[in-house]
Image 1 (cartoon, rainbow, N blue to C red):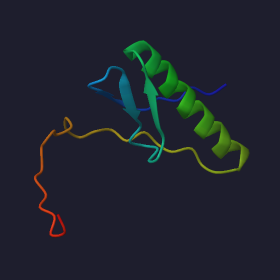
Image 2 (cartoon, one colour; image 1 turned 90 degrees about the vertical axis):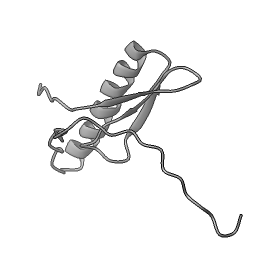
Image 3 (cartoon, rainbow, N blue to C red; image 1 turned 180 degrees about the horizontal axis):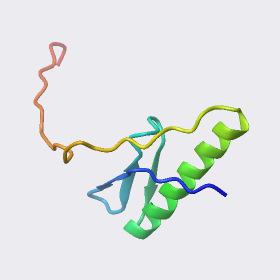
Image 4 (cartoon, helix red, strand yellow; image 1 turned 180 degrees about the vertical axis):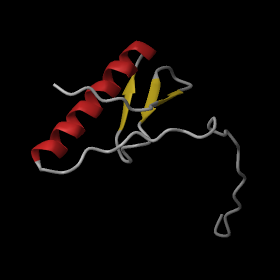
Length: 82
């Protein structure tokens, strides 16, 4: 059995719960109604993705360490058609 470590980001949602993003595995996103559930869902999503890669003979992704804290901004976009 191999143990892997991946950085995950938990984004609180206004309606409750957390969206979970794994930077090392683009496209893998999950959700949990609580932080504990979000952690469990993240672990399950990573496990399923990595087991699928191993089954297909593909290499496992390396963790993406965040060099800095994530930046939160609001960007205003003007639409020509609106």
